[in-house]
Structures are given as C-alpha cells and as structure tokens.
Length: 50
Image 1 (cartoon, rainbow, N blue to C red):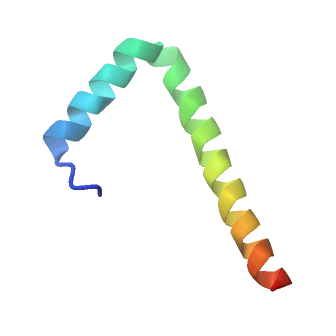
Image 2: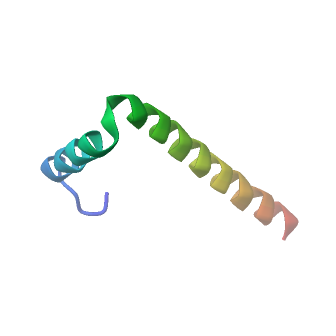
C-alpha cells in the first residue's frame, strides 16, 4: 500500500491520534468510509449509463 511499512503506518497513526484525539478518530474514519462507498457507487452508476 503506497510503499509504506508497519513502522511508517504506526507513526502516521500516532500523529493522527495526537492531532485529532481518540474521540474524533472513529468519526473521521466513518466519514472517510462513507465517502469511499459513495464514490464507488457513483462509478458503478456511471458505467451503467454508458
């Protein structure tokens, strides 16, 4: 995944935890997942139209 190892991912996760706090991260993750689902849904609908 983008050439990142476990150490790099742990550092990024730690920085996100410091920036947003423990309570905000699940909300951000949920919003990110919804946006990905909507994007994929839009791609599928676009393929049906063509």
